[in-house]
Image 1 (cartoon, rainbow over the protein chains, first blue to last red):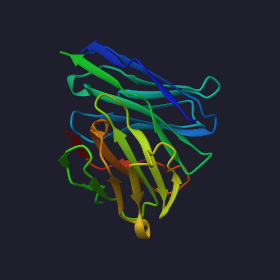
Image 2: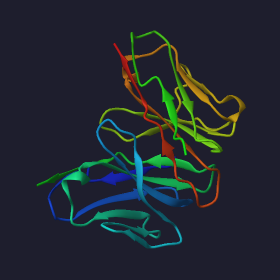
Image 3: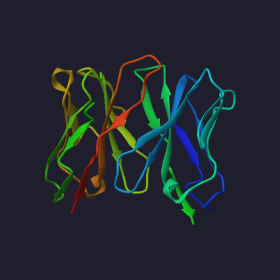
Image 4: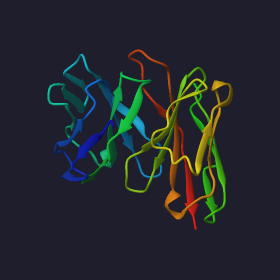
Length: 113
Length: 115
């Protein structure tokens, strides 16, 4: 079945450094790739997304890239701040069915002042 | 707009008891998802509804879990009987149907502890 792999599981950076989280997906029919941020005890919230007809998207300090051939997509956070500390989930939506939304296992990002 | 509502927020039950969770999606959202999130893991899709029909329940343990979405709006997820390994946060999410707009909005979740 559909699968989304996410790496690393934990990431620790110093404030101001960049952070990169990588995901791969198995379903070639996937066409939408959202990224969610989940703070402790809170619900996942969408921070950025990318569609399969675009290779890169940027929103202030965050950017996503997509390589459809390799079935890879990545989240890049620049100039990290302590408030970026959270768990980040990548996900993939397959157009082959009713927008089935499958999540990766998550990356716990810690930004140290 | 109002968000996805879930209740209860917390529930503690003994193993072999039953429990039910309720979800009210965002008005007009045709797709409703139930996820199980075990501590330290990503959300695992249990069941997906399109209006009032099930479109995916491949990961739902059907011997003990059931879900329904009457009239294509509210949904309930039930566990009977519960096991210790069912301890998790149960998240409900909804999204508009089809097209490029597939952002899923999540509720606060129900934290279930089975003792």
